Image 1 (cartoon, rainbow, N blue to C red):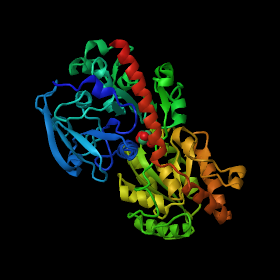
Image 2 (image 1 turned 45 degrees about the horizontal axis):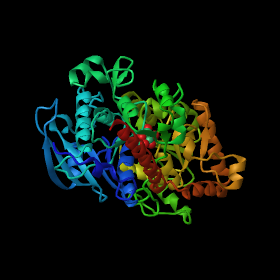
Image 3 (image 1 turned 180 degrees about the horizontal axis):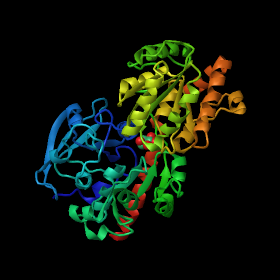
Image 4 (image 1 turned 180 degrees about the vertical axis):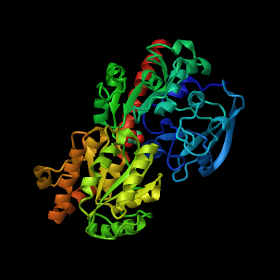
Length: 510
Ligand code: GLC
């Protein structure tokens, strides 16, 4: 295969025109199961606005193929472990002028529904093969495919599904610099030894300093061990995962890599999440016209079959139903909280079947106070952000969290556990911060139902007793700036650090 020359590949260290390939297994709206999708679409867009030539690569899930703009076949590849040829398709993101490559391997990716699990919620049995194939293709493209006429200077992988790409590239003479972002350390891509032997990874990678993790194959270790720079999505989570409590067994490794590992807070896309221009909500509003927000509350109550009342104190929850998110804390406090007939809860969520069922059961008991939709639905998510008074995020851990940042923008006061990105984005209401006018929400410290309940009661008291204080709290949140530009600039710095290290290693091994 023809290769680009080393000099043309590595000479540009300035951001202008910097070529970055962002690899992810989801990107909104092509395919989304969580916050990674939002980041994978908005970070490259923000980087392009700063002058980078950022491009995205994803598996060709049917939903993604259907939404790709101006799709064109680029080339076909023969890959180890795959009987049929793999097609690379190029096109544009549906909403931005962002080049997107799709890896079309129908046997692996042409499955409707969730990219990781079958309809019953079980992981696909061939996930190791599927994402190894994705990583192999990423690694080939990262070295410059003649048919593409483009080689990235930076390969930026995200989460375990891309973790083996830097490992596969480690000895490649024309590899780019590599950056790896951990969006959630709890998902590591772990498989047994038999799988490792079956899928044809080089035996040299099976070691403590390679992909082996407690006698299993770890995809995420590939990203952490073999990348020039590693980061996660908030400074507090970056500190937390270096401790045994949050490190999911990888805290030692993350401490060991020292300054190669850092935290960069995600931004949010204010073109999509802005109450002043949101086409999905009934009544648009801004800080100056905060009073209009209540129209969205009435609309939300109508949509979820709850009694329409301006005075109701409406709590919202949106998210995946997994242990991490602490929904059990919400379930535990509901009987006590809902004794106040003016409290209502609106939920859009999906995930583990027993949590779904527990929510449905309790909603059936309180039909006038709980509205629930099981599933993920972008429109309802916008309406919850616009229509609720407060937003609950009692996550046990939260790498960054985006919904609390959307809530701030919509003047929907977040009540959050003091962890990860939640601690980095919400300023707790205390007599001092309220008096100074910099409070934006409520934080609680213990992952205990009572701690959550106390925080909700504190919020409810302010809401009922001091409407002007409440308005100030909510509109202070609306004024915060979590746009992508600042975060994208930090990624540029990370890329330039990765390039510098890569060039030093290159010079040393030349
Ligand atoms: C994952 C994390 C979440 C983070 C998102 C985007 O979904 O759980 O905290 O905001 O990735 O980085």
